[in-house]
Length: 240
Image (cartoon, rainbow, N blue to C red; front, side, top):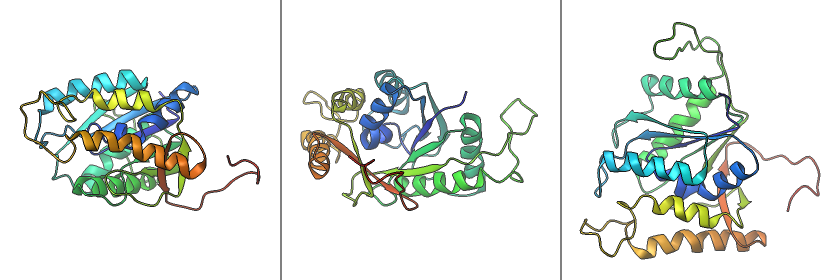
């Protein structure tokens, strides 16, 4: 299956928090979108890996994506080395996306920057024919494939975006997908320990960040991204 967009996250819920409304908008526009979680989030203070698996599946349904996979890397301890790069390359070549979205280049959680660089490096290596990969149970080598665009969504830190996507009309879907992770986010009845993302303030911040980014471009809501290369436009009037 060829996908238009492949979205990577170090943990289940990263993609929803960073780019959930953009994903929903692209799906509504007819794009085929897939989600790849690098880990199961097994070191999370609240919930468990098994609970996160179910929550991730529900969030994927809400967003309407074509596929969601988990690579099962070690939460907190995966590295940007050949072994992990090859596993990421395999899914890039499997789905052949034109666009890849991945974690923030800098953030509070150590896995986010690691995941960002890992996916970015794998996108480049995936285009080299002499890097040979094959899927489990298939002796046929995969064809090389390099995405045209690699963008990084913004997470905990308020990084300066290189561009902002107008996601007006899609924030409600994003919030529903986020709240599918009931073990992780604000629940006044939860007996789990408090974490930086379990407060109502954090959940509220998702909306007011989107509203503030939207304000910067003259729309209701926005999501910000950073780019690895200069952005290009076909015409001076193609911007909103």
